[in-house]
Length: 209
Image (cartoon, rainbow, N blue to C red):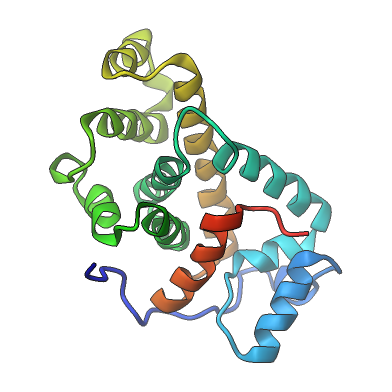
């Protein structure tokens, strides 16, 4: 499958908050950062945010794992595509590329994932999945305008209430992450690093012990 993510983009760099960057606390993400620096490897800048307050990180990662990776009426691949699509709408480059890479690993089709992000209507996704992503777009950009008719359209597309609940949860989670990441100044890494780190998340999820 042809690669569509750039191989070389901006590497891990300083956050806007120096103390968050420079004062990690002991825990799983502290260890991940140390190992990456020791080997000279790129790492996801969000690890600095998670290492700064490990109790927050633990709660956030467990919540994220439950919403995004445990069994649900929406498959893990579509939930990761929801994450990437939401992030694209919020212009959060880090989250968009990170979770596009996770979705691409799960779908085994990077071109499909990026076609949905760039032009949903022309993508070769099932119409049911497009309906969910259209709803996600409205939740992200016009959440105050959601009405019962929006839910009825999802029912008509074949989604039940439990599936819609998970779609909303995944979208809401990444509206939080997008703001958390962007306002702290987390930058993208290389396309190769995104794919390497995404493969682990696709397999194991969000929790680090």
